[in-house]
Amino acid sequence: MAAEENLNSINMDPLISGDRITIPVIEEHVKFDRKVIETGKVNISKVVYEDVDSYTIPYTEEQVTVERVPKNIIVDAVPPAIRYEDDVMIISVLKEVPVVEKRIMLVEELRVTKIKTEKTETHEVSLRKEEVEVNRTEIRTSV
Image 1 (cartoon, rainbow, N blue to C red):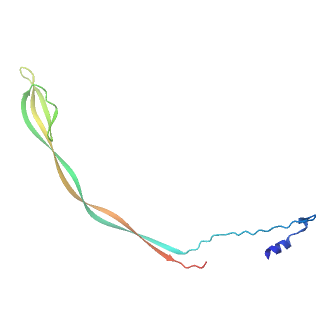
Image 2 (cartoon, one colour):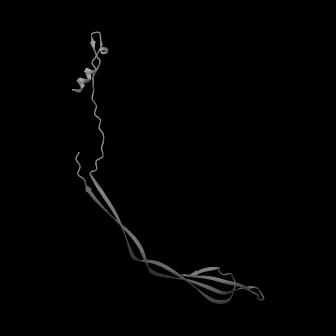
């Protein structure tokens, strides 16, 4: 109906030329718009809990003992500065002593032993944990 009124309101004189009549063609278009409609709500809450727990943690502790062993022996050749006998490190301590001829005397040996002991300690560690609660509320809307 509105299209007929639009045709009637158009001045047809310039559209007529000779034996030909030009009729304008009208086309309708649809335009869609979006509208935000709230359909519900979400409530989120978070609670942080803190617990203290005890943990037993193994570790290795090493102790070193030094034992002085007097030797006072005249040696013909210089012994190695450091040598090992099993788990014991032996460090030779030398000095030159005057004699009719000069000789090397082993004064003492240092025996270094490592003693390993497995132990545990208890530490209190503070750990946090979060819990989240989600509540949805529906809202009725008429479209």
